[in-house]
Image (cartoon, rainbow, N blue to C red; front, side):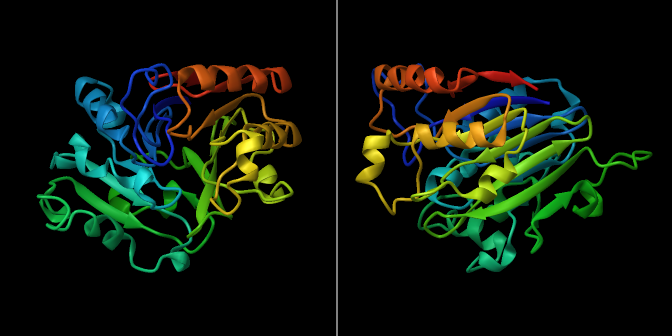
Length: 289
């Protein structure tokens, strides 16, 4: 399993001097397994990912791709209309989010709404690719749960990955995900989470013994005190989850738009003093599990 960061910023994209090292695009992560590729969230970073997909000859990008969403705030969906492969009629995407009951509208409407002509000149129906919308009520998903058109290749009877979701505290709700590959590797993705005065034990359980935990760290501990109720975490809370869960490596993401490269480097050093196998996510950085 290989993980590549395409968007590491939270709240809003940033394009200014001093923000180049960690990147200014909002949340988007590519996950590539032995036979398939998947995408976590579709912030503005997905535009660059689309260009890389077109430039690649990797057949895994030709297979139906899961797009798994933590939630639907703008910084996690705003890049979707600019994702080039979504305009290719030869491609298929399974747009997925756990917990259908939490949605105030059906999943398709979430994406069609931001592409109404008031906001965007091309409608969802005009994009070209085949979209299948999958919003299971259950908090666990395997490839066998996907529509037949997106099922495993002929002769493959075992799922490539099992995905477990966990609803956590964030305005409007957000899901963290545990992705367990059939080779035993585990990735946990947990962004837009406010733990409160105590760590959310369900998040700790979701990250248990993960090879890589991607956990948001929008604030410093001091900033968090003045941002209660905003739905985010600090770097020391992310470290505490990693410690409690016994993860092998920690990637901190969803950087605040006010934190420039110098600020983030200083935060990264503090984090590494506490949890040595940690780093602040940078765009285009790849992690092999």
